[in-house]
Image (cartoon, rainbow, N blue to C red):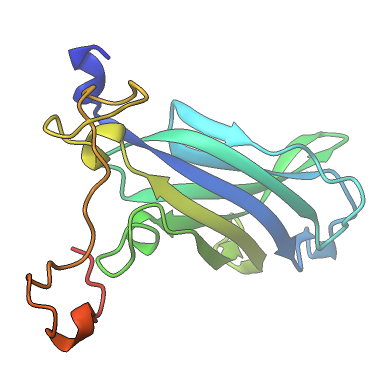
Length: 185
């Protein structure tokens, strides 16, 4: 791989838009044609296809994969409805990146989340259910000192990481078993 790939200024976020509940438009239950726009920044967004059958509780179950710059703090979730007079926003929610990239979860951990939607007046307007994960860039999991037999990543010298703690060479050292609690940093 070229050196530019090793210094990528973004990571990949996967957001699966699962469903929504209790959607209203002008205080009436939504009948059909709802979809979701997931926006990382003004120039980087993805959209689900429209749900024609779910009414006020649509279901999409669509995975959107987007590049997310490292400085991103929130991902916007915007539920819209196609009407005869054009597309209208039903409600929006902000997904804090800290909810999917926290100190206590491992990299690429899948999170199932629900957020309150708010309409243009700031009033409650349903709930959106999503799952999300941040996929770390290749260089964060394969430093240049490791060995990669497939040829992907920053180096062609990748080796499987060694897990656990060496127990020494004594045969009677507690039977050679080491136990512990995983800690992610």
